[in-house]
Image 1: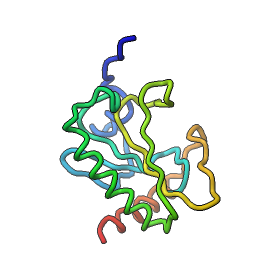
Image 2 (image 1 turned 90 degrees about the horizontal axis):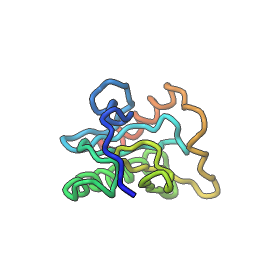
Image 3 (image 1 turned 60 degrees about the vertical axis):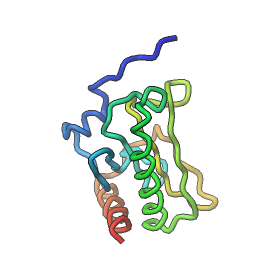
Length: 143
């Protein structure tokens, strides 16, 4: 089975180009991090490389160092910002794995003992909650 080509009109490509708004918590020359609008838990953040690739399977290996450096930085910040007991890091590749947006991205979700993740197919979070959560993470990144 051949892999599909990268779609330059995927939602994350549109966010990267500024065509769709996002609540960004971090950005550098290679990576952005922003709030997931359908969070599985408070503080659910997405870390996305600016380099185009469908997922980990077709990404240029040079993408991984800057991407995972930021994943770690964001994971430490969300753990601190939300007083979490731990952090779940998720990354999906192709439909069978659960991937629904075909631009490489990593989910960073603060976790709390005894509290399960919400389904990712749930409703969208209120914008004011996303703003507040983004502010908490930016503050933790700055300290």
